[in-house]
Figure 1 (cartoon, chains in turn orange, blue):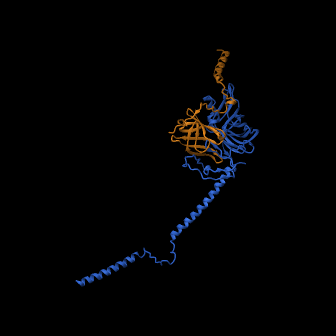
Figure 2 (cartoon, each protein chain N blue to C red):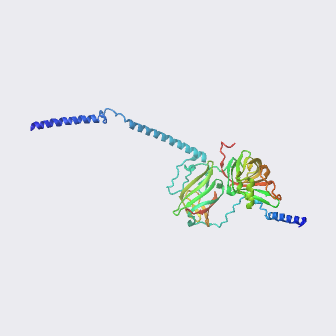
Figure 3 (cartoon, each protein chain N blue to C red):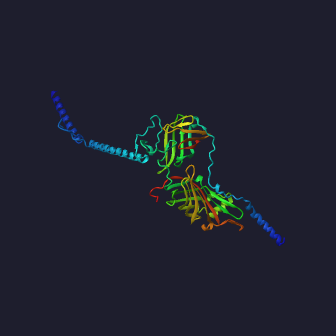
Length: 146
Length: 317
């Protein structure tokens, strides 16, 4: 093998060594894709019934004027029409749980918690529950109590 | 026979007298006799009973003072929560017709509004802090890791790539209206969790960043200058300056940022800025001298943070 042939072979080997690196596609993230975007909860909602409401619920999302201070919500609706709820709320003293309990009733999708406040609109969708009021709304996921 | 009976009688009498004297000697230290004249005035007070009476009197006085003080404090609390026109009412009972009763400490007295005091804020029957979040003051924020990412874009001879991680922590305090008033905080990311999409490249990156010795990439915020503030849209454009620490080396660093509130009223912080690896003594990767990465990379942040309250007056400027 003469010098030229040797040079061609060495060049080819070198090219074959580094070329695969060029086959790796660029994975640079576009500016618009940098932020974590939680997909909107696609859900078909229907008027909730009592049987759907019973159980334990943990909030997935909170929207509205109260969302700034409400970190998490939990509700438990018992079959005997009793309920209890807890909300993790931030204030000047930091985050604190607030609890309430009472009796609940549901009629035509209007949930009355018996505290004198306007009834909440209750909608169900699969394992989700949406409670809405003029103050905002919250979407809950049913969780099993083990 | 009669003489015998006489002797027995005398002996019995002497025996009984002797037993009485003996009993008297034995009990003289254990029995106290008190002789008092009926109707001649109050008997001397029992010291033990007197002590108990005194203690009870003291407790009664303390209880009265506590009740008075509690009433005043509840009145002051009602005034501060709902204004000067509130009349305190007794708290509702859960047993009374099963009505719901919030049980947080801030709502125990459940005052009734009499005049034009603002109604308490509520959300799905829960009572919210009386004051809505004040964005004009200096507030503290905590990074929500699951909704945040930091990364870098790099250029190399044959292709460009991004390294990114959501293993982000941090907190900061600033005023969204006037950030020059106060801006401080710290954001850190786990260097070993940067993912470039290729395992071998990730390994090389960890080696160059010496992640076992320097596990964190950290930015200490020291100031924020605003170039544009939109109160209506609640957005702010500005420059965040501070100290960046990579591989144990700390340098001044400035990054243009955009702050905005989302529909859930969380704060998003986005920005990017160039950075030279050599400034932090990070070896620039190179393969066979042919495939080289550029010294300058583009560092970017996409954070979501939740407000956790106002900065305490002691800490605020």
